Length: 592
Image 1: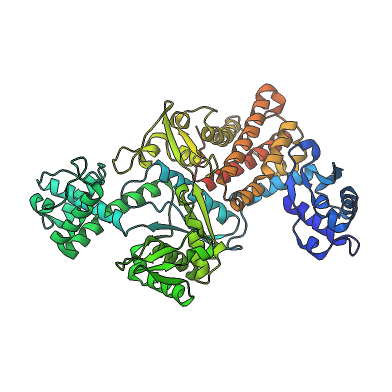
Image 2: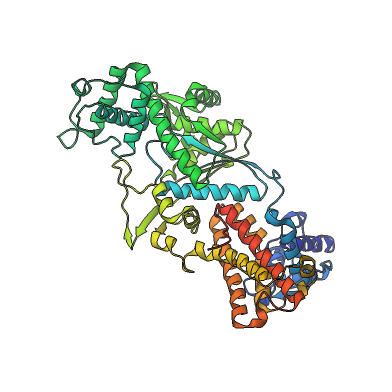
């Protein structure tokens, strides 16, 4: 219904006497908002306040002129001027009834724009290092990214979901040596596992996979592995130097082919677990993009050549530097080290250039809060390569703390003493996992209460919303048990009978859904949809309670017209609850 008010206000502005407002004012979209107080109407606009100075008039005087120029419309029952010049619109009951019919007619399409009518978006999220299972922090990224992608599609964007596999660099080498050492243990060797290796039990199944693939071909005596390797912590050594020496010895003992085999098997094992975990959570991707492919496909070299051609690279201390400080970063950045190795930053800007070259208008990265400095430098890299830097958005996710019985659960990935995403899902279920993760803004720290997520009570927000949906099915079963059926045509013709206060509240709440979806997508804020669903559930449960307190307000009454009108309202509420939960990746059960 908001587009109707927007159209009326635009028409009124265009109908004002010539020279009342400058062209720029006429072209800017009017701000139309829902009123917070129902006594002030359904919608309000501050258009008169915004343009009073340009019109050289008192805001109330301009508001009076705008109201006078408003076209008549059956959807609007009354228009008032309030305060210093706000214009309030009171909708006619028929407008709410028409929206209810739209919900019933459009079904699962209600609240969705025509597809591919807006920008094409590449949404990259999770992109966890494939060095261990996903933990509860990654889960927040997955739930947020999954919901955001659904919201963006709902408002008309073409969305491509991508997982960037960080399968190059030192952390992958450390994973490989960790797997290889566990593999040697399986073959009977006894060794002191490095302090800086990946010590979690999740490495052992990968070592078993390596043995199944390679047999004993990669076996080397432990004495040869540790010969001349500097001491580890806590034996007076440096854990970083120790693990790097082990990696170098592994490479020397296995040769390039053997080393590559361990890398491939280690990554394959970890990625299989990550894919399965996310898939079971209902989070899927259009592409899993390998960082290593940027080197093999020449994308990094091509990006650096573009920077060089544009005059944004220079040499210093044997390394190649990007003039990032000229594009808003706090310092210049190395892209090629003195030893010839490309940096992570070189990979990052090459990857984002590749996204643009694939034709995507907007690039949205979902990253951890510790990537704050990342934004300016990658935008700078895009600008330096001739692409619009502002095409990149970065949604920074704050941390998650997991609580059990009021006690905070400690986590540490390399030591392996963390709660995995799979363990969380197994304990509280996919629905609670996804719903709880997006209950708060991604810009806020999240405390995840396990006991609340598992509870079957109105205190549990996901249970509360799903129970509203299940209650509709319960009413329909009661209808069938009484030998009655819903006459949809009679219900549609009798919507004027929905005149009780709780019914009007529910009608108004239902009509908000498309606006909430639009606003949540625009603000990259799935939590706004969560809040709406909780409010809708509250209004629905209120309508249900009204029937318990007053038999005349029950959904199933003897008056057929009244009954079918209320059932139409009931079915519309069910549809909107189902649509909203679907965007969040949460099920809409028929029974609880």
